[in-house]
Length: 94
Image (cartoon, rainbow, N blue to C red; front, side, top):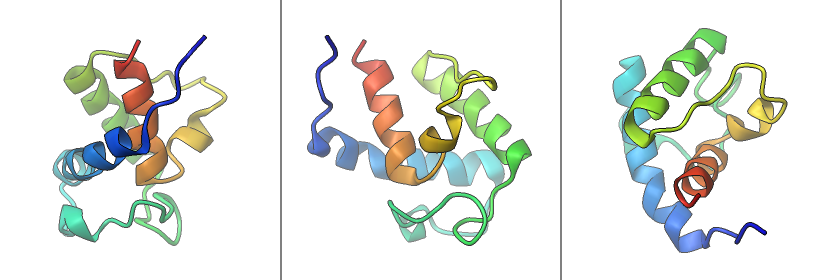
């Protein structure tokens, strides 16, 4: 059985993951301006599939687990900064 990750752990990870996204993609936006629940695609940050691949690569290097392109949960995982941070926290807890 997997334990739920506490909201505090996810909150603590948000700035780190925001910084990772900004750095990996060379974005002209301060990490603090990325809203935790705003979409990463489309109207949110406006990321595309190539951006996701770059983020996935950086995450695998930094956190030591793979984000597979064929994972059926990718839409959920990359839906927002909070969702991505929660996924990272859950993988790190294993």
